[in-house]
Image 1 (cartoon, helix red, strand yellow):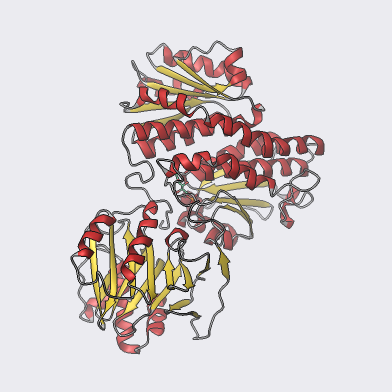
Image 2 (cartoon, helix red, strand yellow):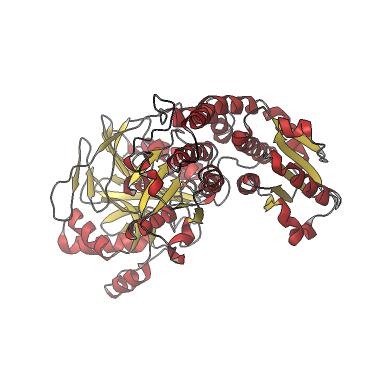
Length: 612
Ligand code: F6R
């Protein structure tokens, strides 16, 4: 969701800006633009649509070969349609500005500035911020002071990159609730909304703290707080390389990332198992004595991460018998959830920058509840603000549709469930050890074997290329899996899908089942197999075409009345959801690719949703 890049150095800035913007494409955007300092002024080029359109425009402009300091932006429209005018950077008389986030009080600011003689050309909230900083700059004559004055007035979320006509070779930046990183390299200084934009230039960066202005020069960066004091920021190291952030021979990031699941799970889990073979999170509150004090658990997240939470709920309640409430982060803070000091709130997020998840975290903290985040991006806001963090070691996830991040979130929740079950006296150490071993060794191996089904799944997917509707059904933990299967397929293939607990169909939805409607039944739990099979019979007798995805054991033992059965390799039934998750991800992938969809960058979607 919107991408920021800025470069100041000794070389032409345009290639750096374009390369950075391309690396941020996965975040989702519908227009792009750059602003470059040239001959004591600033030149701006903006274009609706792809970065190629922008590049074409740049090539016929005068900024093509000049200008060693510039900022660039990919915009995902929120206020005003995608258009050249609404694209960033936005100009004010003294500056150009790029922005990620939402200015909530932009209308008020515009009204105030209109009275001062300012005019507005775009429909965006961002233009108000650009002109407000200009307003203070004209009065105070100092970029840093102007930025602080303006951000005192602005309400909402922002990561700003600003260049001034009269301050050559310098980029100014500040953020609140939107991510922004800063780097100083031999090639020059950078700002970016996300690591991929700077990855080919450096392996270290600063995650800019809120309320600090970063001043990025050619050879150095400095940080200043509201009082004008120098602020020290922590330097972080990027632990993945350009190759990992590239497709590595796969046609799409999504399929590459699905293939990375075994390694991602192995890495995430094995680093949390102690020498005694039992979970060891290295967090005081998660040790066996303290963990038992939590009476209720709330898992809060959005989208796919929330679906991982549903899997976690099933597993935690099954083996630890502690009640778990799963909340959609955007609803959590507004429904005034009942929270007590004995509760634990777990925030799940791949990016660690999802605005709703961050707001939910802050809400929980404001109620004095202990918060644990499970996050993939090191140093991200959710990771930093939670009382403690468990990182998932999935590596960079570039495809907008989340796959390996989901699997590792589930894996950590399984491990957490084992630890909690021990803490509650529900699981012997011997059994816990066995589960940990299976999770670290057998699950990744079984997923690797599941990946070999990709061809069979691709063949099966051909049947669905022209489908308009599809239903996923399952019971127990599989009904949670159905929610994710359905989200995955609809977001990348644009096929309308519904996820239903199999027993719920006859309470209304079965009226939608007519001749040839595709239904996919997920079955991992043997004690529920007959129930799901009777659900299959119900839809079959109304003309549905049924694909069953199940375990080898169930497929061998039961006469499943489906048109096609895909069975996953052998694994302990408790862990079978991992294998089915891989199958439904591959299923969604092959259907979307077969339909010619832009798999990694589905329409209207952004990788990191940093606005409410
Ligand atoms: C779907 C998907 C989204 C994210 C959601 C939360 O494939 O990726 O539903 O899961 O936007 O994002 P994070 O995990 O970054 O908080």
